[in-house]
Image 1 (cartoon, rainbow, N blue to C red):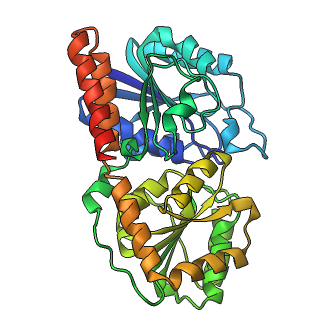
Image 2 (spheres, rainbow, N blue to C red; image 1 turned 90 degrees about the vertical axis):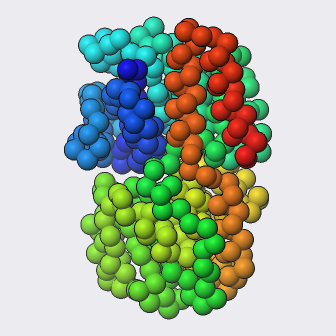
Length: 385
């Protein structure tokens, strides 16, 4: 039985996207018979207790560090050096090893950290979508959409690094695959709207969107509002949302596939949730809430997969109102977005990633067969993309 560790953080600054996609991989690995351990730092909004209680996954907690209140997600918001984090991670691995592989998903960690941890694991799989720092890793996963995905990493990874690139490798929960739908009904009148801007709405987009919907006369029965359970402003958002006539639901969990299936239009962020919306055939009006989302969101907009509003810190309620009206009055455009997105994501990405990792771990047993199997995973996804 392979033993796989995952190094990932969630916090009020980082949000929950990194953690959620690692959870999908952890659950897939465990389904394949692997032992998994998550290693996370005890930051405000860390979700470690929730992972252990609801996902039944062991979590080793690294010590809390101080994060600046104005830190941006793409900075990594680690609160210590890569060297310090690597030393603490090594301590966890040494206490419970040996380990077959490490999956790391963190903007604050790069080649220095990977080289320091590598002696304690047989293989390293790194998840990245910034392409802004070198990596010393065997496998790199970037599930985002880019015009030249391989070119972004050409000078940043070793020559023998296996690249898993594009939405075909996006790790999505099995609940979405079970609830996926084709041929979504598109209303000619006011659509049913799902409003969710992620686990932490630091720019106040939820309330801006609700003010826009209220001014357009959307009745509460056509609007579903979600507020992140770990958002430090969740109580204040809930109070004002209720005052506007749109009482929110707190948290997401297993309800999300059903809520997406019931909606005709989503207002959301450009993070990992957009792959879920694509699979569910849900057209989206998107705002980017972090710098790392901008290039992907712009590429998706230009290719006709989403309707991009712009950067969260530059938007007003009037801007959002204008974008809502654009798609409300053009049902054909909504239908086009739904069909385009549905053709980009098939929900099988987590299996492809785990296949590649486990086949690579089998390299020493049969190098030629393992290489052929890994390449078949990449070839199959490329042909379908």
